[in-house]
Amino acid sequence: MPTTPRVFIVRHGETEWSLNGRHTSTTELPLTTNGEKRVRATGRALVGEDRLIVPGSLAHMSVFASRSFVLSFRELDILARADKVCKNRYVSPRSRARRTLELLDLGCREPYPWQQQQQQQHGSDGEGVRTEAKTEVLEAIREWDYGAYEGLTSTQIRELRSKEGKDGVWDIWRDGCEGGE
Image (cartoon, rainbow, N blue to C red):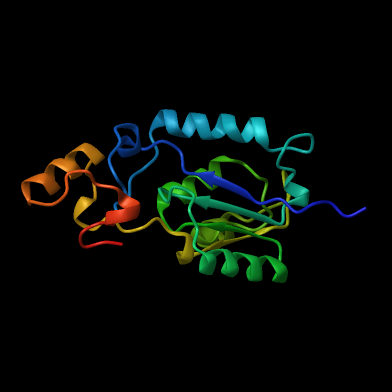
């Protein structure tokens, strides 16, 4: 009996900026120690043969950075078409998203694209392999560009806009980001 397809969307672990509410897009920030600990705990809780995410059945998983989990129809179409071709996991090009995927411990046979040289040097004996799904770094799911608002909190952005004579009631969906998306 066929099963209903499921898509798993995972947000990156905690960074120093996400901890204090600063908008992050292109700035590469590592996960905090607590962020790494929490992602590992999430992996243990959600990934396994008797868990929500069964690696051997994995056909599609996306790991995003600060995108607020909103995808355009174009991006959803890209993911849907790619998923019909092969089993895959998609990850944002941001290092915080890639590190989150690593820490979930899905038991991938193939090395992650950003680790190919390192893995080829050390080899892999197949121990711990739980999935044949491949990983693709996909620019289409990167976080948006906050432009001039990069590294600022929403409160700081509203204050800045008020000083510039703009509406101080900033809404990212309505007003966008100066110099960004």
